[in-house]
Image 1 (tube, rainbow, N blue to C red):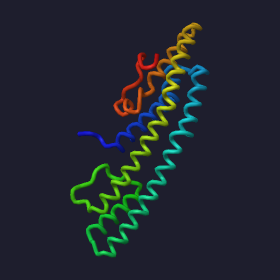
Image 2: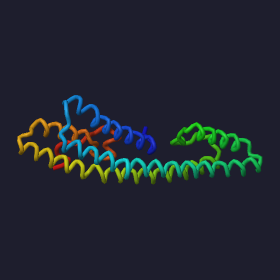
Image 3: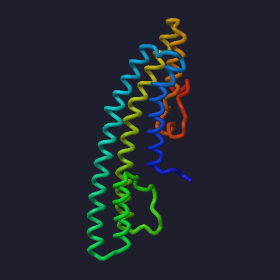
Length: 194
């Protein structure tokens, strides 16, 4: 069974957060310290990720949910005025789920009223666009980061800072190779960035 796009994006975000936590907590505590050059790159990555990936996506997602809520309310009024009980009940449930911060389901059940299916399809299409933009933004950050880390690893090796080079390699290899690889748990290999 194929996973839905929202589930894939959620997995990507979880893996990205795990990467950040690993870089912040696990690597320094496991190895003892983080070289200052790596700490600087890590801080820059965190800052840029927040500025260019996380915050814009969260703002756009809030606007999308706000617009979806308005559309559900409009449809509810129309269905209620037309006397369509099933649609009215389904749309009321959808509003309740939105109030509870629940996600819009990835797929609809067979008995979902047409009006709600149509609204959800529109929401999913827009969400897919937002998620694609987020993936592209993340990839735009991680690709040059991996390249810079490989160069730093080589510089540390040349300077006989072997322990630092190993720490940098461990950090670099913990970065997902791509947004698709993040969903499957794959990480960068030495051949990915050379």
